[in-house]
Image 1 (cartoon, helix red, strand yellow):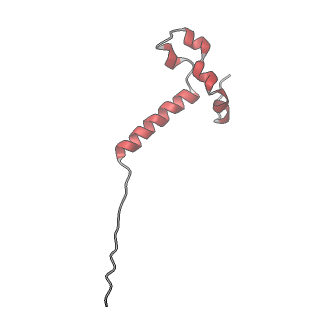
Image 2: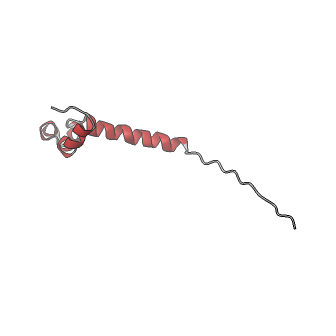
Length: 71
């Protein structure tokens, strides 16, 4: 009896558009956590967003843990 051995080679690659989408999400998240001082909500709320700083206060401790100075 003879046995046949088959070798299967599969190459899995990540689609380039998936990498681009994840990079954009990362960049937007980095802006929100590190640099947003009311800019995002100022589109909806107006000048009051710069005083309330909703996203800043939401991620305040995370900003310090990531090394972003904020005051």
